[in-house]
Amino acid sequence: MLMNNQCIQICLVTILLVCLSGSNAEQVEGISTQQVDSSFQDVNESEVFVVTVDSTNLRFTPDSITVTEKDSVRFFWSDEILPHNAVERNGLFDSGETARNVDYTYTFEVGENGTYEYICEPHEAVGMIGTIVVEPLPENQEEAEVLPDDKDEMIEPQSSAINSVISLGLVSIAIGLSGFLTLASIRSSSALE
Image (cartoon, rainbow, N blue to C red; front, side, top):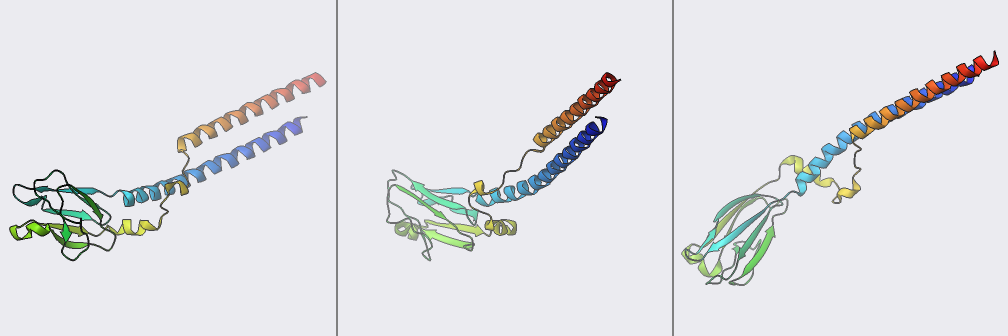
């Protein structure tokens, strides 16, 4: 009977060690996944810059902005006295016909870095001109674009705290079971005498 209890105890300790080593692997995997996940978020976090008009002075407000590739510029005005539009000189973007109400957004793609001058067609002669400077994405963000668009495709790491609690629980069970088997072995030995 004592031999059977020792075999069971050895098996329990082996199972416990396997479980504990698995939780460490998950923790290492979780760290690398979290690092990739943060890079992925940076790529998708683009900004929207709003350009309005100052009809009194016939100017775009602000008249000069600096953005990064993947950022958007929103040309927005409503109920203006005079109609306006926003047209890039080389045709990259065009808000359309002049209008008193405009809500037009253009997003600068990767590779469209540079300086762009845009105008209000009917008011260019009086200086209604704006400038957009588009800076390239930082190199680490360009490389991260190969990651999937859907974050659900990425494996979510398990919390190291949860792994620790599970490991502690397994240790407690193994110790308790081992103690129970030892006590049962002692009782059965004394009963045989």
